[in-house]
Image (tube, helix red, strand yellow):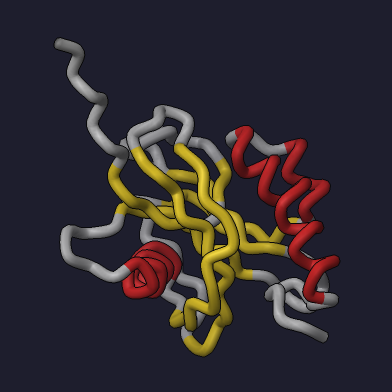
Length: 148
């Protein structure tokens, strides 16, 4: 009898855009998973935690910002297939960027075409290169995905 593979755990990716079309990316710190890779703020959902709560918690823990999760816009498996990554658009409502050095080596605001020059994951390139532009076209919205 074949065993079914375990379902992936839930994780989040927080997509924070500015009016100039740049998005917040973080370079993962040494000692963590995939050090040196550039990603949006990401993190695991804790058992019993609602996904929007995990979005807000992870952004605050990793970069010190207070955000309002707006809506889920995509999902994909992580590169190692251990997680189902729920991509959420977020709005900044407070705080200043203060990276937690245990998790984040550097923060940078990046225009989506600039991701190609960074060490990142294929799913990040797919989201910012294909999914996000399609979303923005369909809503007629700005970088936060809200209608203009």
